[in-house]
Length: 251
Image 1 (cartoon, rainbow, N blue to C red):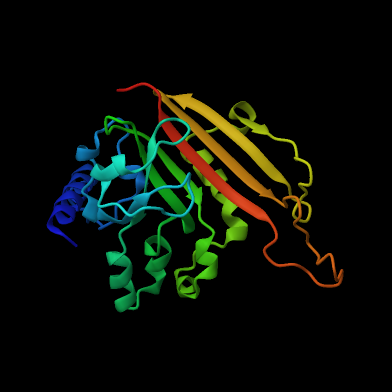
Image 2 (cartoon, rainbow, N blue to C red):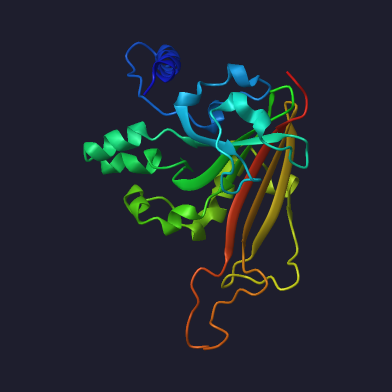
């Protein structure tokens, strides 16, 4: 852990201790996407050594060109909204410390880049002036294919759509007021008896919050092998959650 990260985290821990009272013990924590203040310039964000794996983003997908940190956002191309997406990952120092000391019960909150043990891809989106205008969180299917992630008890890709309910609660999204169940497209079908295809949108405090969840089979996906009806397929479903928070009005 570098000096700048220590200083930043020390300030967070001290603030938490003062708010909680003199008898409370400040518990170390790693920084996450929620620690990025919308409307701030790249130079005012937490120091890059508080995170890792900086790269140009791909609309919530895998990383592209590697970056040195927030300040190199201009190396990334503009997306459809004109913003430049910077992919990043959460720092893993505390995860390795927990592993070294055999504290496996701590791994669900420390392993990988995850939200409530759901693996996620997170990114920060900047305008041309270097102002953070949006953050994005998309469920990440990759840990399903990494055997070293099992002891972290991360949730599987099949459960990824369930993250949507936790995020809806975090931002007080009302399903009846803010959400629309979308119809199935051609070829889409339920997984068993469950079909989820929902889009929610809420505006609050100058921000637009968009939350999308899916749990379905896409065209060409089946529960049974089309060539051998007695054999069940594996992994042929789409389960995903996608959250975007866009700053529409500068503070």
